[in-house]
Structure formats: C-alpha cells, structure tokens
Image (cartoon, rainbow, N blue to C red; front, side, top):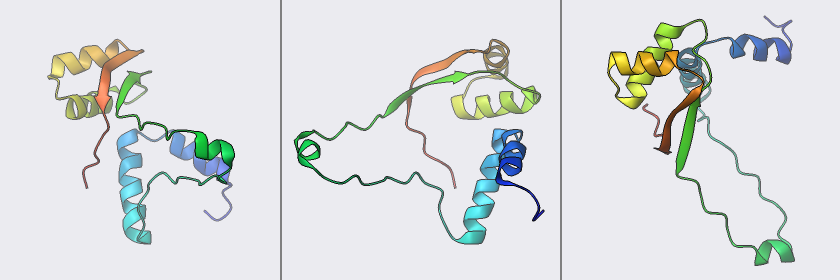
Length: 112
C-alpha cells in the first residue's frame, strides 16, 4: 500500500459509491480526531478588500444527477433517503439522468 501514488489513491476513491466514501470520511475523522470541513483561506486585506461587501452565503442549490453508474440500486436508495421520494419516483428520477433532481435544495446537514 505504501507504493501507491496520490493519483492511484484518487483514481481508486473516484470509483467508490458515494455512500462508501461518506463512511470512509467518518472512519478517518474518528481515527484521526478531525472533522472534514471546507477550509477558508484568508486573503490579504487591501483597499479593494475593505471596500467590497461580504459575499452572501449560498443557502439553496440545484442538484443534478449526472448518471446512476454501475450501482443503480444503491443510487436509488440514497435518492430515496435524501429526497423522501417513494420507490417508483426515485427509480424514475435515477433512470431519467442526467437532469436536475430538484431545484432550491436547502444546505445539507450531515447526520453523524
């Protein structure tokens, strides 16, 4: 495992289902005692930065399901869990990809 390059690790992770990646993130957070969260980088404050108004934080998003991939059943399960749709509606949404699954999604809250 020590001989793997960063690119090989990224390629491997890119082929995992989202649900497995979420589990992996939780495992790494527990093992390393950290939380996976976006990091804000502070820019040097100059005259232009002082004059600019702070950007409004985006609270609603449009989510598009690009493709179901090889694990369509797992994708249907996740879509049902996230959206609260019934089996038929979630199946239709997944099989109709690519298309927006829903407009104006609220910011997600992760279950821990």
